[in-house]
Image (cartoon, rainbow over all chains, first blue to last red; front, side, top):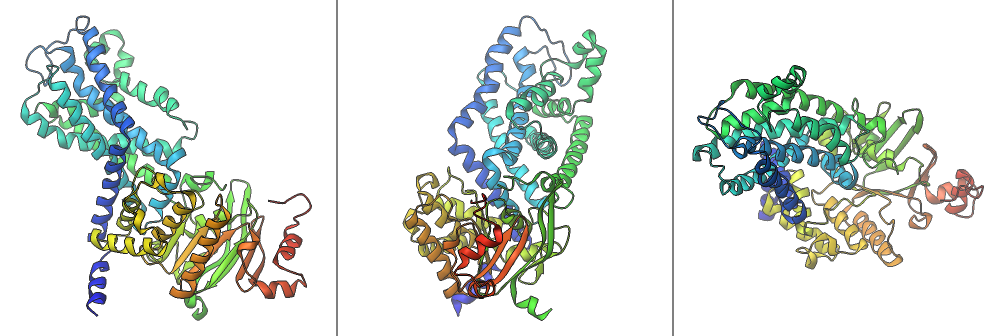
Length: 285
Length: 251
C-alpha cells in the first residue's frame, strides 16, 4: 500500500510542469555527458579558436591596427579585438555541428528517441537547442581562461555579463543550424556547411575586422556584413565582455532567434514539415 | 466505439506517400489489449513507414491511428505516453553507460531521477543485465543492446510495445532470448505488442498476424485462421503465395 502511494506520487505530474523541467534537465545533462565522453571533440573545439588566437592574431598583429572603437577605451591588441569573434566562432561551429549531427548520419536514432517523447515537439527541439548552448558556453569559458594568459584580460565583471549574451547568441546560431539541417538537403556533410555557411558568416562579419575597415575597401561587403546575423552575435558578445549592452545587436539577435526557431519548428512539424516529404530520418530502409 | 476502446492499437484507413511513391495504401489493423501481433512483410513493404506514423514521426494525412483509444494526431501526448518503441536502427548512445541511457529516457518521460533508477534496475533485471548497468553501451553485444532497448522502452510502463525488426543482425541464441522475453511480457504483464519482421519463423500460428506487402494489407487475423482460409499448409506458404515470393522477390 505504501509502495503504491510512493509510486503514484513519484509518477504524479510526470507530464506537468515538473515533468517539463525534468525533461529539460535530462536533455541538457545528456548533451554535457556526451561532450565530456568524446574527448576528441572537446579538444578539437578548443584547439580551433586557440590556433586563431595564437597564430593568426600574432601574425596580423603588426599588419592590422585597430583604432579606438567602442567598447574599447584604449588602443587594443589585435588578439584582444578578435577574441569576441573567436567566442562567436566557437558558438557558430557548435551550433552547426550539434544541429546537423542531430539530423544526419550518426544521430538519426537519437532524434527518433527524442521525438517519441510525449512532450510537445517545440519543447523537445528547444531543450535540445539549449543543451547545445550550455555545451558551447562551457567551451567559451575554457577558451577565455586560456586567453587570459595571452594578455586578453577583460574586466572581471565581463565574465559575468557575457553569460546572457552567450545564451542569446548560442540560441540564435543553434536555431539557425536547426533550420538549415531541416531545410537544405544538399548540405549533408560538414564540409558543405563549412564552405557555404560557417566561412562566409565568419569572414563577412565584424569578428576579424571592424566594419568601418570593411567599408574602406568595399561598401557592398560592408552592407553584407551589416546584414549578417553573426555580426550582431559578435558585437553583442564584444560589448558584454566589457560589461556593456549593445541594445541594437541584442534586438537583432532576439528577432533572428525567434525567426529561425519558428521556421525550424515548422520544418519539423510532422504534418507540414519536410521530414515526412523526404522519408524521415533514417529513411524507410 | 466500444471495441476501439479495448484496442491497444487501432489503425484505420491510413495511407502515406513519399513524393510520388505510395508507401502505405489504405492500411487498417487493430491489436486487442494484451495481444501479440506479428506484422509480416518483406523489406520495403511499408513496416517502418507504418511505425513512423504510429510514433508520430510524421502525421497520417488520411485515416486515423489510435493508441489505447487516443488519437495520435489529436492527442499525441496521451498516445505517446502509452507507447514504448524499439526502433530498427540502434538508438542507444554508445558513449554513455547503460544506466545513463536509461535515465535519459526516463527524463524524456518526466520521471524523477531516483524513481527512474529504481525502474531502470527493475527492467534491467528482467533482461538479466542489471549487473552491466554501469558499463558503457559500447561494451555490450548486439543482443544485449537490444535487450537494453527493450528494457528502456518499458521504463515508463507503456501499454503498447512496438518493435521494428528487433532481431535483425542477431545470432540464433540472442534472437530466441528476445522473442521469448517479449512473449513473456505479453503473457505475464498483459502488454500489447506489435512485432514487425520479415522472418516467418518468429511468428506462431496462434498469433495474430498482419501481412503487409507493397504498402497494402493482404491478410489479417489469427495465423491458423489465415492458413485455413487460404487452404494452405502453413503461414510460410500463405505468405509466399500472397506476396508472390518465389517469382524473384525473396527477401
